[in-house]
Amino acid sequence: MKEADKKQVITWLLAGCFLIFSMVVVGGITRLTGSGLSITEWNVVMGAVPPLNETQWQQAFEKYKQIPQYQKINYDFALSDFKHIFFWEYLHRLIGRLVGIVFLLPFIYFVWKKKLSGEWIRKSVFLFALGGMQGFLGWFMVKSGLTERVSVSHYRLAIHLVAAFITFGFTFWFAMQLMFERKENDGNRRLASLTRWILGFVILQIIYGAFTAGLHAGRIANTFPTMDGEWIPSGINALSPAYLNLFENLLTVQFIHRVLACTIVILIFVLWGTGRKKILSAYQKKSINACVLAVVVQFLLGIFTLLYHVPVALAALHQAGGFFLFSAVLTVLFFFLKMKLVAE
View (cartoon, rainbow, N blue to C red):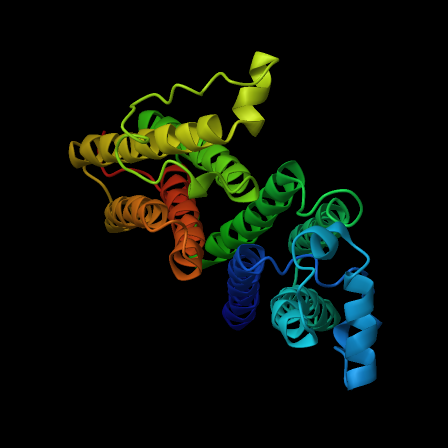
């Protein structure tokens, strides 16, 4: 790939990363403001146009009145209240459509101008498939809250969120492949293996972050480091059968979320300490330092979000922090897989 073409493709991929990041942050605000069920239909083309007059607004509001969330929780909403929650869900879906356009149009241009090799065309199609799956999972999630529930399923929320991180991760990884030259090496197995474990725990933490959000588990036990004075909450095994506690017990879900956070902090500092004993490249050192900074900030954001009973601003920052941590861990893994240590 020519250097000029490479720069254009890198810009394209990073723009996609930014939009996916924006969509997830706005999606978090949508959930925090209870806005996610305000649009009860999915129409890819016509859904891009919001209500344009009072009649159309009233029609959209009447559709919202048919779902349990309005009937059981927001029954006192006026049209002005509905417009507020509609805004966040509409913005979330609009960014999703924008992601599709930003991926599709430059891709067509790159193929037309023969700027992409066969390998990169296949990678681009793979990203399209991930994006299409993400759109389907978004509607699959919303549907869970339109009939019997007053909110979406926390299981479907977790699937939708993890899919977004996976799409972002592959897009970011492909961009890094173009940004940095590959070097033949088998890397440092210990550091690469440790980073893989960290990445695995981060993904598990994303899942439990979604569970915590979907169950509103962050609104209980708002103390730290103990949970209402207990290191291990007494209600941790309240549900039967016992395995349901791992997924549906609010105390247990929050407890696991805390334990995973502490585990990730420890592992990243172990990575940092181990790396200090090696002679690393500048990229490797900077990526580990960025990872340490990201996990410290994210850990503190999590604590303050909990202590202040999940305010929208802090919770949104916490979700954004998850993206930065995920990106930092991916970057560390990339450099240890693609770039050789100066000395073992």
